[in-house]
Image (cartoon, rainbow, N blue to C red; front, top):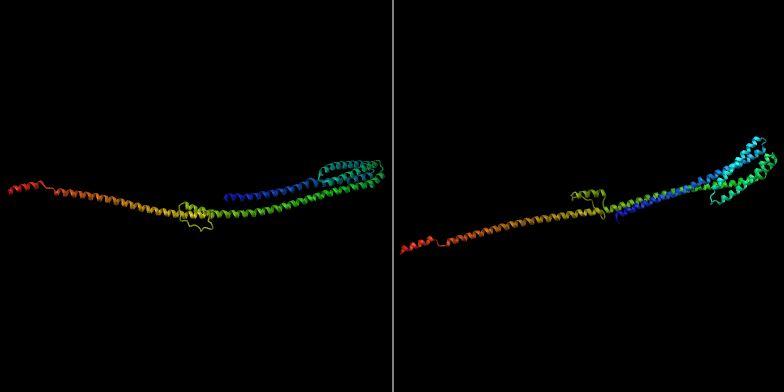
Length: 329
């Protein structure tokens, strides 16, 4: 497998781990955010509204009883205004609370309908009590308020307490779910980080070991000896080759082969020089021999010429012979 493929594969695994860790974190953050949104946007506002409704019912009840007992017209008008304001605030809070009940909370919707029914019956009796009190029929108003109306308002408050309990339970559940999501996310992220660190460390050791196995030596040392070899130093003191040697082993073999080839070439060059010198000497010798042969031939020819000249009769010798012949005669 190519080194680039191994590096890409190793870093690819690390990237996948990082992305998975991030996605897990985002998922858990989303879960926590959902619980926080439900807690802040549903349960807590519902509890707050129900608390206001409970206060207004109690306020209406107290104002009603105070109206029955009061004999001061100004105080009665003030109490009537307060009761009207309380009913207006309750109507607004009831409408707002109704919007907060989600479709999946059917039980809460059913209990809320029961509360509205009980509150409607209470308000109907309240109107009767208020009318009697305005007409100074205080005994009748007190009897109705302490009798039937008391039962109805207790029923309404009991149902209201159920609604408050449901919302408190929902708020507690959302808080618990958010806490669990946080704990799970924290544990998952820690596990993912530890796993990623271990895998990253393992990949780093594996890749470094693989790279060093392919290189055979530390890259810095390889650069050092390669620079010396490139500069012409073939007598580098190499470290012993470990294992297969990798690139370093090939470099050591290459330098050894180069040294052998250079030595062989040097020997061949020396042989060629000797052969050339011998050939040159042979050529000179051949030339000298040829010159000697030519010289000898010339000497021989000269000698033959001299001998030939010497062997011919001289005209002077012929004249002398004739003279001698004449004298004898």
